[in-house]
Image 1 (cartoon, rainbow, N blue to C red):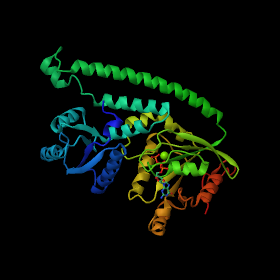
Image 2: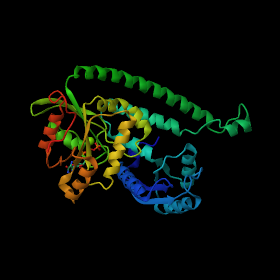
Image 3: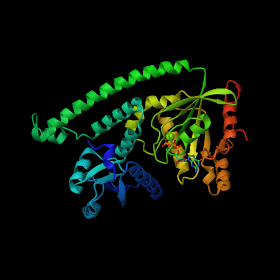
Image 4: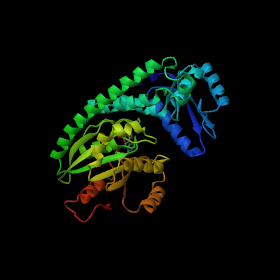
Length: 375
Ligand SMILES: Nc1nc2c(ncn2[C@@H]2O[C@H](COP(=O)(O)OP(=O)(O)OP(=O)(O)O)[C@@H](O)[C@H]2O)c(=O)[nH]1
Ligand SMILES: [Mg+2]
């Protein structure tokens, strides 16, 4: 199987299709992100191909002409990895790999591989393994299609089908085993959580690379891994912190991203449980990203998908390098009202204000106030 280390120093290209549903700006953001993800895995992206299509080609997703153009580029530049922004069907994978004679991966696979590279604890590793198996299962060619049944009747088998069936059986077995292991760890964690029941819990949530771990370090004087790469944090870290003499539990969680693979969301349910159990969410946003409003919506949608509806406060980070801060502030106050904060975790700007706000939110001391940002 193609693993997370197999990208290192390999020449790669990215392919995206613009369907009617997507606008150019959205594709541009997704391309930048995918390029960044590929680089994080060590691949060298030489070119990004984008094609406008009205509908997907069932065999190759994009059109015949574009496939030929890309094929020539692959031969000329000796490309080893082709990264598709879209999710491909098992047969599209097979057809495109045959045509290009290089490894084809899609966005979901890239994200899964980054997660597997980043995971440190055995719990996170198990969750990712489970997500990877679920992904592999979804990419195995479908057997016994309606047409084959008609053509061959009972007993008709295409080449390699019995191996695929064996693969499928083995993957299912592994999924069952991993699910059991995760359940066991979950039960242990549940007991731990019960012990911490009467401490107020805060979770840092947000898009990947917005500065959650940096803020965690500032608020807790801890040493959580910080890096200018997507998905530095895959494991949840929980720390006891004291703000203005009040005790809290602060957790730093995995970052979100547009089109977070569904397999990951379901496998990470228990990690995300930490967020579910929180009394307050600090939603951190990188104010310098062009797409930051979209990122806010993306995070909010994922939280909704996993049924998390908690008091939260939007905290805009990285103001130390923000151009037109006042214009942005004006726009954001208008859009979100006064319950927002502007900080720099790196330069420790406005951290005192954030601390005071967190304490003010503390429901034990202010029973009638859910949250209100101090100014
Ligand atoms: N200029 C500036 N950079 C910051 C600030 N806060 C964090 N960063 C940088 O942003 C990058 C990402 O920071 P992290 O703390 O790893 O971000 P994260 O949200 O935990 O990322 P993931 O764990 O990947 O989801 C690092 O290079 C940080 O140094 C800030 O206030 N200003
Ligand atoms: Mg992090």
